[in-house]
Length: 111
Image (cartoon, rainbow, N blue to C red; front, top):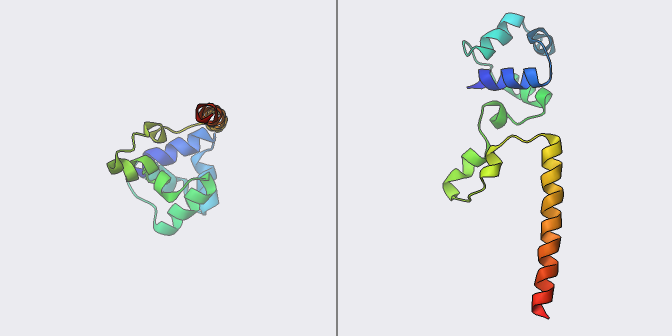
């Protein structure tokens, strides 16, 4: 539910409920109710929260790209994980090196 994800994002950024409430021009109790799944934010508030935390509304709602496309059987289970920026950069660099290696190997086999 959205409350767990909202709390997770807020705490990851070392923010208080008061800070989130001030951004939304809402009461701290409103944020507490969101986080405890007592009330849910309206669409406009969801968009504001997603923009502020730098995530998609789907992510804020706990929907991942993997879950949306899991029926395709792609086997890309790594898409389920939330990566840090460092992890994401490392994986991108590793993938680029792997692709370069495979390209060179492929070129030798064609000779």
